[in-house]
Amino acid sequence: MSRLAAENPKLRITPSEAFVETLVANGVKDVFGIVGSAYMDAHDLFPLAGIRFISTAHEQNAAHMADGYARASGKTGVCIAQNGPGITNFVTGVAAAYWLHTPVVVITPEAASTTAGHGGFQETEQLPIFSKITKWQVQVNAPARIAELTNRAFHYAQLERGPTQLNIPRDHFSGEIETVIPQPLPIERPAGGPDSLREAARLLAEAKNPVILAGGGVNASRGRAELIALAEYLSAPVVSSYLHNDSFPASHELAAGPLGYQGSKAAMRLISKADVVLALGTRLGPFGTLPQYDFDYWPKNARVIQIDVDSRVLGLVKPVDLAIQGDARRAAASILENLLAISGRRERNGERIAAVRREREAWNEELAQRAGPNEPGRVDPRRALAALAKARPKNAIVTTDIGNVSSVSNSYLQFEEPDSFFAAGAFGNCGYAYPTALGAKVAAPDRPVIAYVGDGAWGMSLAEVLTAVREDIPVVAVVFNNGQWGAEKKNQIDYFNNRFLATELVNPNFAEVAKAMGANGITVEREEDVGPALTAALESKRPTVINLLLTQALSEPFRRDAFKPPRRLLEKYKPYSAV
Image (cartoon, rainbow, N blue to C red; front, top):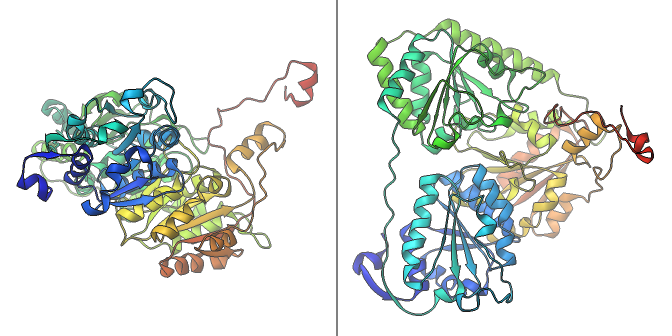
């Protein structure tokens, strides 16, 4: 509770003061955005309230920073900007947070209520724009309600696990009001229905080959310890859902690795043999369960138990035998309690544990063989990713962009700590990794933070090097400079007869660009220099860009079912017809 609210529950203050005090009551220490006159009256109070304002180069990146901040801290991220164009620039960042289930309060000052609809300067209807990518929206319809509705936006962001929009007409920051500064409400998430949890325990107790699929809900619920206890009781292999490689410690004897694009064949082989799958804290998204490596690994005959806090995703993508709306941590603890009641204590199943070890060893051997040759002045992508993984500190946070090389990193990224891997996720927008890394570093200043970015995506986020320098946020960006939009170029190779239209890039030396912006810059051309460059960048404790020159080797496309050989019917286009 803020001191002012504690001393005087009912206050006569300005709406700006009420707004800022409500931010303080909700634990806000950092806000990301670009300054604007629409909220400047409140913005002026931030320093006195103990709120740091991180000024960004672009509003989309402010939303990504708020996303990274929330994912690293478990708190609610906050972004704000000028009405109209500043707010529309938020859209991609908010959409990414929506599909990542990240609690972010998106504060959208609006044109004045007294002139709404006149088509004035920087005016647009802001609520419809975000209606499909937020969990809750509200218009502050009177200055006297600004504290109440601000508090509610924070509540729903955490309750619904996603972005909420607080739309405030700019004139509603002014005047005087009488109000109470509300305090955050406690959020209690149930484990699920007792009967369903007992049934889940029965299915797992009778299973001959159970497998646990651990999703993002495990970390969101702070349920790592409960998951480990349940897995060890069952001696069940644990596979991670797509891009949630940090949901289970990689060194654990039951850890099999991630599913999805460029995931672990060990995980895929093990889950393919399951007779019962416990999908814990995951929506079983389609992109994370598609066939990979020409292997349709999803078990056709397994009994599937899906547990997620959001009832709307239960059974949505994959058929399930038992759907439980519940918190991953509490559900795991309840299932273990029921298992103990059913079966008592169990001995470790050495056969299952040995199977996990064999599959992991086989996959590691195959992965090493997948690396290609280096070229003069350029490193094979897989060799580079392996070297980065070897040099990365165990407590590091890694963010990844979308793109061929960044996505191949899924094969190499293993984590011991939760809240360590922040990928672009299902929305898959380029330009995600670097600003998200900046937000994560603000939230976790004692942890090394590294962003993996392709050279195409780097063009969307390199301006934030200015932010990193200005705000002293020592994140390391590893830019995979291979002179191509690799993911799309792979489609042109496979389906369009190597017609490289708009997929080849001519890049500057990104290390020199970084130096011109006030950051450190390192160019790497040899495999043996990759690890030392990362170590040096982290030890410098300064914003650093590693310009990592790679060969143009590309891995499999994201989806084999995305295209068919093109057929052209008009005579002028038949030269480009494959059939």
